[in-house]
Image (cartoon, rainbow, N blue to C red):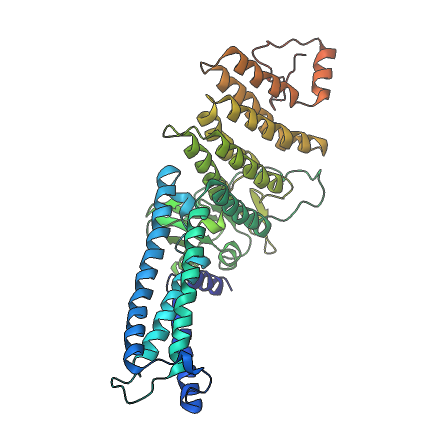
Length: 461
């Protein structure tokens, strides 16, 4: 099943499959129209739309060259817009422009029209004594005329698709779809996190190493375990999205002596490739959104408005992720195989991946810091309201560090006071009351000083 999915994904991403279908359709359409012309002898076309043989050959020859020119122009416009976006933000945010179904369909349609015109042109008589296939010629003219509208729409799509809001929306949709596919929703809002992974067994296990270098593109955990004997302990040393160097461990197995055939089967279920596969890990989607935000603030642009748009999409991703059950660090299958996954991403890892770089890049921009504090506070209060303090603690910690990062910058006193007041306002009232009852007093310059190991906020009112 996984092999068929991999082949299906490869075909969908291929730049040649969809255009090839359009070319085949264009050839097939030419056969159909020529057959109708042979049967009806131009009866379907009014006399004022009839063309002579010489005019038909000249017209279709020109149209065939124009179709190839338009296809080249369309590809150039798309590639230029992608190059500009990649230079401003990151090459990761535009990784799939060639695999985009719309781009492939436009290119395929133009090449299909070219194939149709060539299919009709080859049967046109060279002299003026034989009447050309009028229906086929008129269909070619209609298709060429319609392609102009397609080109205009393609250029408009190319320009709009590289705007920040469109890029962020596409990345967010893809990331949310991965969250739905990979992580089930929690049975209850207050579902407790899984226990910590047990330590691996003592002694040296069987280390299965990579035979080549590359990115981990696919890891079929169930099939890999099925290739191992029962009652073993497996520690996965990699996860999807990591780069592995040849000779480095892929996994370690304790509790059984593995022969070379078993080692080869296990290794075959961890596929390495030259490029990462963004569609299989959530971290890559979060990093792409962060690239957009950081790129908007770099190179002297200081595009704070675009950062606000990206932060709204970051909040969409975390609002969806916060209610999901993340993979445990360890689990046991039906054959008493214990699986340890120390490299698997946890909630705190996703929070750090999103907000560490945002905090560093936006610390000198009060607008960005305030927007980040509002985002973090909104998510943290929602989690606190349903008893998920183990997840909200990471968000409170990011709020405290964001305030500290802003204080380290040479900001105006009014801007810094704005940041502090927003940080205080985002905290639950209960925390302020608890601190007041305890007689605590925090420095006005540190409104989010921690009062516990979880870095819950201490408020001065």
